[in-house]
Image 1 (cartoon, one colour):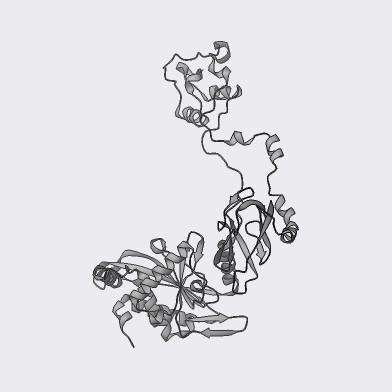
Image 2: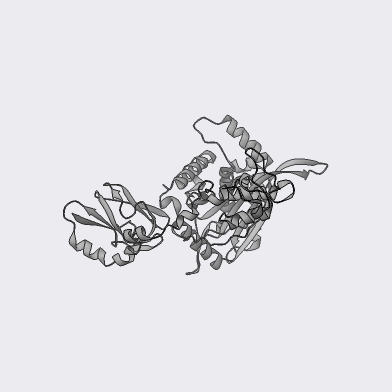
Length: 435
């Protein structure tokens, strides 16, 4: 038998290290060639590491959440035949750290089994003494005949139920043979556990290590809030006409076209608004003191995925019509949720939209996607009575909550930008007017 060592491969793009975010195997597992054994993350791209051989896992070289350098040994596999001795010797230097995680069979066999106490088994068997009739001299009561329903208050019944105790086995000492709390306590003194009824204090702390994408998000949010002085501007938008137009377009669309949501309309309005205020479609390099205004509008779409928040980017929104925007939004959202979005699809945004859909709340304070200078937040649509000059009428209202980098965007410019979006969304035909 020999040993095969797997090293962290070069994941490309000049990356020198990656974070281990998932093990698909454990020590002692048998693996086949091409089976995925681990996943590592660099920036926002997750890379799976396959096994090049068949064999048994005998050593794991890193903990989840650790950063591993490219070329470092991460797995040792016992294989048939001779293994690369030189490579195994290199891995052995890191082995003591991993050996602490290997199970010790002898110790495990010799150790008592306290875990059985915590197993959520069915009702525990009652002590033999509790199953026998107890003399009146001991309990001042008698076991009730077979089939007789015990008399007890709701609180006593709840305690007995939580403890898995059959009240028929407890003679009652209260009036008319009622089972009392004291009877339960006496039963507990003979070996049965009776919990305290009602609300109870809980103790214990669960420790969850922040790794992978969650750590990347935390670092980026902290960077954005520590370096960018945010100003947030909230404005209400009457989207009644927009929603009517959207419903008509969806009702008459071609089968191959996607269903339109609010976002494609907002993207087209955003393109027209930043054309008039290009300083908002920008990246601020605060280290160099340079603002990079972009001609192309690359809209980041903050999306919640099973792994956490991602921002896929619709590139060149200025060159896309309403339906093309919808197609690209759907494609990128699916890729982000499936974890197949590429590095190129997750980078390069110049301005971002964030939306929580129906859970959007009344108003939010979005965090700017650093190093951009503006983010537009969409809140939920609500029907509210609005005064039209002569009477109150129901209107579909939605707030836009937008944040700006106050170092480079003045409050006046922020207000002009949001008011332009408001005008376009409230008269949606203007979104389609060129020039």
